[in-house]
Image (cartoon, rainbow, N blue to C red; front, side, top):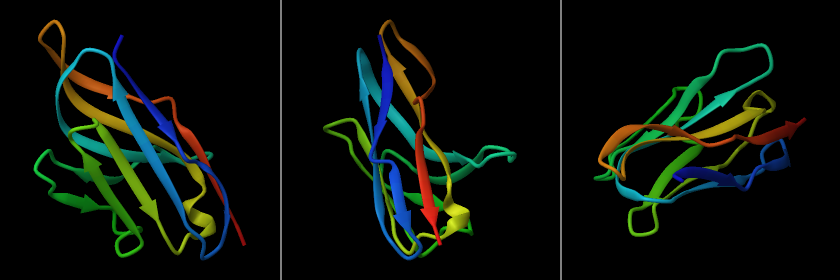
Length: 120
């Protein structure tokens, strides 16, 4: 069974840092784009950062210069380093990946989400 499992969420104070990680497991053949999304209470889910298999990145304007997405293709993992955290970064963060899996199926997978809470 293919799944994405996030870790690293928790609480931080304004200006602090947290690192999120996401690992793909199961019959994964190849991973294309990997992304982090977030959803705050009462708001729509939004794309925070994305990274291609080749390492090209893009970020939401609200996190540029503060968050860094990276991946380890050998370990099928993606990370989100979050610095200079603000209360408005409080949300559930979801890992998402476009993957080829056995038996030769390509689709998007989602993790279960991890809570990030930033206090002022």
